[in-house]
Structure formats: structure tokens, C-alpha cells
Length: 163
Image 1: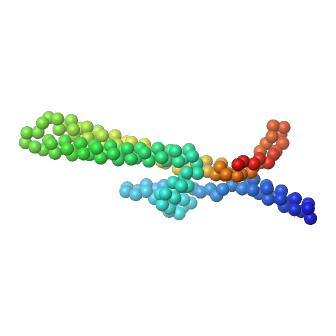
Image 2: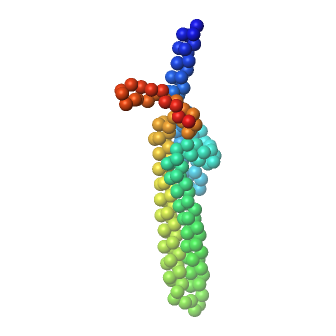
């Protein structure tokens, strides 16, 4: 009976050491006004998508960088649009000063730069999803207790515990 219990205990330890967390496939589909987030083909909310993405630190870092660039581009586009509109409004008068052309040009350039920053931020977010999809299979735990079989320096194998 003791031998059977020992064998079952060893089998249980091996099954735990080779067990991996559930892996998911993330995808984003950008529309004109909205973005659809899917996990394993099922549409989810953006918050759930980000929580899943947070399991890979490098991916969530790129995602956050992309979000920051997005918000910066929104602010720049708003400022550029205001400057463009103000310049056009100022230039529409009868005795318009010549400075309105500079305001219109500067506003247009700022808007174009904001679109470029938005595009770069979107590519960072796409890279984050790609990094997650590539690396999630190699992560076996969420920094809690885990067991694994590792090679030793003498050429054997050992059971390793991580806390």
C-alpha cells in the first residue's frame, strides 16, 4: 500500500510540474470608430483584454506606451485643430493680418504629426498583442508557487520548486 501511495504521489508531482496555465489567443480588429477585442474568438471588453495582456510584462509595457502615444496624439490634434480654425477665422476678416497663414499652416502640420503619432501608437499596441501571443505559451506560472523538472550540472534531472 505504501508503494502505491508513493507512486501516486510521484505521478501527481510530475503532473503538477508539467502543468501550464491556460493559454489564450488575443486579437484586435480596428474599425473606423471602434476596436473589437477578442480572446479565443470571443469578443470581450477592453478591460478584460488588458487584464489578459498584463500576464506578459513586456506586452503590457508596449500596450501602455501605445495608449500614451494615443492620448498625446489626441491632445495634439485638438490643439492643431484649434490653431487651424483660429487661423481660418482670423483670416476670413476684411483686414486680416498676414500671421493667419502661419497659424493655418502650423495647425495643419500639428494635425498631420498627431496622425503619425497615433499610427505609431497603434503599431505598438499591435506589437504588444503579437508579443503576448508568442510568449504566453512559455510562461508556466504567474509568479506564485510552481514546480518543474530542470537539468543539473552533472547531467541528471531534478525537481525544482519556485515560490
